[in-house]
Structures are given as C-alpha cells and as structure tokens.
Image (cartoon, rainbow, N blue to C red; front, side, top):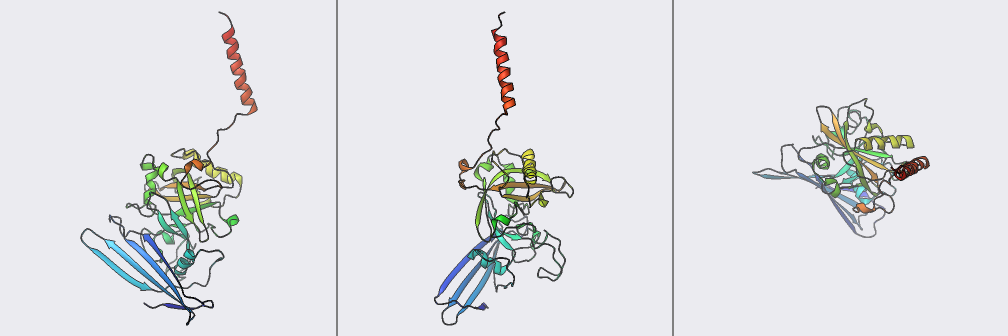
Length: 339
C-alpha cells in the first residue's frame, strides 16, 4: 500500500487510532443479499519522523447462490483544501471528510436497514469540477453515485443542497430534507415502506438518529404521508427547508396532519427542528412517501415514547363552555316539567 505522508507539528507520543465504517449497498435489484462495502482507516504518528501515515482499504463483498468473490483495493485519501467549519467536528467526521468532503452525517432507524452515511448535495455541478466530466443539476448527483463518487444505481442518502446542518444550531435549517431510493431489497430507503405495510410497525420504530459532523441528534416521528412529487403542486415539501415564520411552519406541519396515515399523537410546535425523509412510492403518478419527525425536546428520552410530549386536547373557549352549561340547564328544566 502507498501511504499519504503529512507533516505534523504535534507528535510527542505514539498514538494509534482506527475507525471502521460498514456501509450496506446492493449492486442489482435482483440480488437477495446486498454486498457490504467496508472502509477502514488507520492513522499512525511516529515520534522520530513526526509524520502521519494514512492507509485506506476498501473491501467489496458480493454473494450469489453459487460463489463468493472478494476484491480488495488499496487507495490513498484525497486531501481537500476547503472545510466549511471544523471547530467541534468529531474525529469520525474528520476521517470520512478526508475521503469525501460532502459527508454530512449519519442516519439510523431501528428495525430497518437504514444505517447509512448522509451526503450533502453539492448543488449545480459543472463539468470537470471533481464530480466527473458531465454537468449535473442540483439534488441529482448522489441519486446514482456512491460515497466515493463512483456510479451506483441505488446511490447514497443525501440531504438537499439548500439544507444547513452545521455546528451552529441557531442557523440550522428548520427542516432537513433527506432523499433516498426505495430499493426492492430494502436497502437505502426501501425498508421505510414497513411503516404503512406492517401493522404496528411504528410502535417499534418511532425514533430516528441523525448525527451531524458535530453532534448526535434524536428525532421522534410525528407523521408520514403519500404525496405528489410533481413540480407545481401546493405541497412542494422539497422546497420547504427554511420554515422561518410560524405561519410557514404551521402550514407545513398542518399538511402532514391533514394527510397522515397514522395519528401518532406527537406534539409539534413552532421552534422544533424537523426532519423529512423522502423516497419514491409509485412511478405511475410520480408519488412520494415521506416521513416527518421532530427533534427531541429537553426531558424526552430516545427509545421511551412515554416521555415524548403529546398533543393536549383543546380546552373549550369561555363561550363554548357557557353554551354547554346552558344546554344542560335547559335539559334539566324540560325534565322537571310535570306531565
């Protein structure tokens, strides 16, 4: 293997760090077992040479009914000059961003196959700009490219190019939108259809884990719907990342409530950070299945739905209460009238 040697100014001791990331991918829809791509990275700092050695090994495993093929490729990590903000960035993210600066976080949902890295769409891509020789419009590159920017039909999970998911929570988008293919073997977002196909599935998978490059966040699902993916529709959820005003926020949540396939009872208020997962539902009408969640509040515990704040029944207004009292009084008077 050919290591990358990087000058280091701080090396008084020998430090060894290793990280292993497993990404479940598939090569063809027809395969029953999806291949596993494992990226392992070792960083070694030597005291005498004051330098860092980085070695990346990518191993792809594909299985069929009759044979198993293992291919190992040794590569070196590209070094990017631009990192938006590395203050507070986790070591995990630092390592993966050396391989692809578009790495934005990790998404996981229990009892599903969703356990993948999330890329930040780079936006409009000009030819020969580090993403290939062809032009690519916004929100399309990772639709059919893997973590290493190689063509892969099922692509990689990615958040909208307009999303802000940085270190400063005050500037984060009110609604993070993440896209993924609905694959037949349940990879990518293929297993999300369990929510409407399996009775009671929501009760076992109510929470979503989404880490940024800086921090881990937990969300609770408050609704999921089937909606149109056609341009020009009223509920163009893919254009609703910045819900700055209460009116915009309530409108978005209201659309989910109006069409929800299950009444979860989860309370959602202006100021909550939202997460929307989007995948295909049917090609015939270009419909989408989307899951909407909100970030957990203080005191709410991931995995414990009993701690999640629920919608409180609306209390009747003074006028409504008086009307109900009058109706009761009138009924009592009628009953007291002798026959």
